[in-house]
Image (cartoon, rainbow, N blue to C red; front, side, top):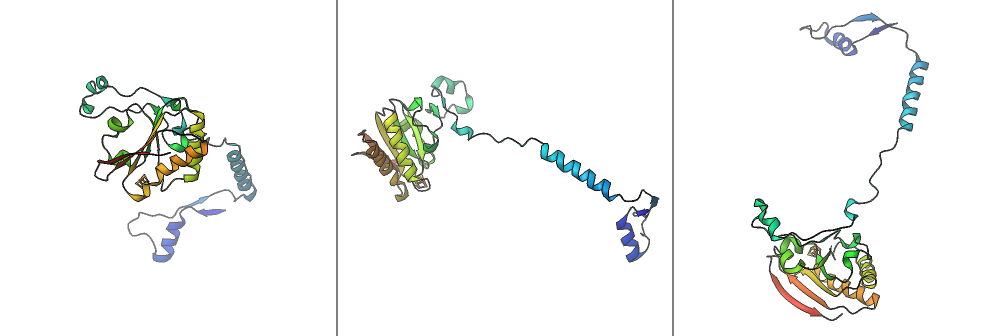
Length: 216
Ligand code: SF4
């Protein structure tokens, strides 16, 4: 069977004759007859091989849920790091920090003073590490976009499993953040616990504008 190796060239020739620049040429050559069965056999082999390929394994869970504890950054670490010379050392001592990711039985929760911070506070208040986090265990979440019911249950489990000594709740001044202390209080109520509770309200300009003790 004769095959037109350059179908495009053929089409061009049909439309406009020979290519004026010689860039395209029509070549005729002999080839074996097209074999439908051989093509089908080849396709079947390729498809079967694909089926037998091992599936790509996804990580079995969010890497962020891997529990870690570590020491806060000390001033000597800062002194050894020129870039961070004027920065405040991290006071974070554990991972994860998202409320939904922290298991109620995590060791770092035991007998701790808890800082429950609304997500936005970390960005609004530049001294959060030194002024609010130092010496505390951190949990963060957003009362507006996260699942409040799930948070109440999670806090209840935490208060039952870990002997939390005190709770500081840091929220933004905007109304959408006001639900976080209420979520913590409902968690306490569900757990039947009375834990000293303080609310710290932060302005959008990065100032603490109010601190108040709350009744559980
Ligand atoms: S409730 Fe509003 S201010 Fe508070 S963390 Fe969520 S988005 Fe930010």
